[in-house]
Length: 300
Image (cartoon, rainbow, N blue to C red; front, side, top):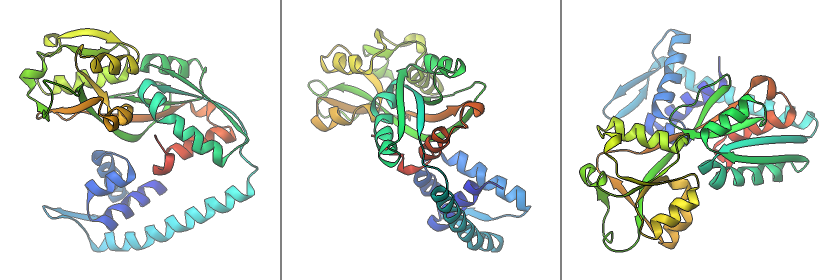
């Protein structure tokens, strides 16, 4: 029995919505549905009734909700007491991260973690997805935070968040007042892309391909390995791009760039935590992995 499954079920029962519960837990709805399904398989009984109005609890679901909240509270109390008995977290950890999460999200998580565990020494190494995965294989890094569509390798891999992506354009004519692009107009635009080997590029190509857009029809005019270089090129009017909103907070706030949608094409990418189980046994590694699983991880 996985305690996280019970916590997930409690969130669904409390909100009455798989969608809302998934958002609160920072996981996808299919992943949440799978956890509920595993609970139903474990107990061999239906726990939820689904309808157009949302979800409701069966009698078995009501019983499980009552117990799951008690079990979760007891588990949290146990962990808290164990933490107080355990020696203080100290030691070194090298974290690898892909460009977007490494440049715009993980640094804040490291800062928050260091405030909680000041005796730790954390280093961050940023690269594209292929580089980070190779570093994890070669044990150059201990833990990896990777954005992309799919991550594979001889690691423990967990999805910890979902990131929205958007088309970015210069905040000037002819884009004033534009809120979206039609797919047939998007393919005509000069497009600035991340380099091959980038998780973001993989996601962008897969999203467009799933929407029926031929990747060879894209008008790619530049490729950069630097997120900041892409933003500068778009701001200067050399083309448009697709980028994670995590990397755009400052520019969208200052209105130096503008976000638009491609009509009918959702753009999202997943963020994964990956580590070799044998390399994640140190006190600091266990503490950091546990911290990244929490909604309070503090991505910038």
